[in-house]
Length: 367
Image (tube, rainbow, N blue to C red; front, side, top):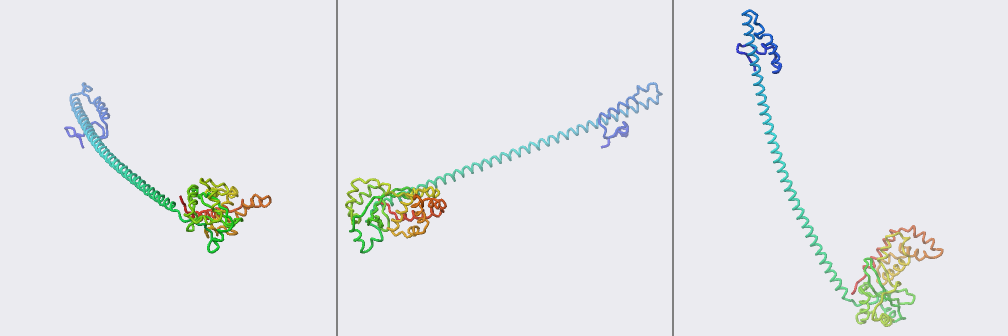
């Protein structure tokens, strides 16, 4: 905005400054002009000169006052604008901070709500899982208890046992039973699960080529305890085992208290299964030979064809049996040990597991 002194002259031109000059520059220029035009400097000058100097000085003073006032107003206006702008910024900052705080508080509330809902959902899910687990365990326990009761009931229902072997079928059965005295022994049998049971094994000839076992419905009868087997065999009306020659002598030897069978009459499927975890060179030959013969006798007595096929001549189990029977011999043992070291353990282990499984499928437990 243009600023004019009362007589219409431009104060900037009058003072010799520009519009961009600062207050200090205007004052400095004013003091210079005062030194030049101050009336005291011209006391000795003619009257007209003094009048002109006085008039000029008045214009300089007026111009300086106008410019000073204008700059002060501009400064006040600028300060006012700055104050308003600062207040506006502060208000905007407060409003922004309020909005941000409100946003944070809202987000915090929403987060807390989500977290609470998540915790509640997780708690419900955990409770549901725990309830389902508890219910499932209850059902499983009830099912196990029911199965145990049913199994125990079945095991207490003793069938009418008879000596089982394909050679006893038909007319030759009575001849076999009435022949020379048979060899009867209690035997112990540990299954892969570690369960231990007891049964009988009898040989119908002195060469022990045919082994017979107590059976019913093509199942080998296995008693949970020696005492339960002793009580069962003592009741001759409950079974047909007494038809075998030498039965009375066996019952007399059994006595009133049954004793554990010796090592030669104990067969441990669980120990065989445990041994299969290791290389064939670490297997105990006597253990595998004894259990192999027992598996063959049971599978022949009960006509378990799947197991008999695993034991045929030339099969992995037959080959392993030949090696074990030769491993301790002075000359043949060296070659047997070499062949045993190069044996495919996985193939033989798989065959042994199948054979043990096949025998256990034809076991019926009794109490």
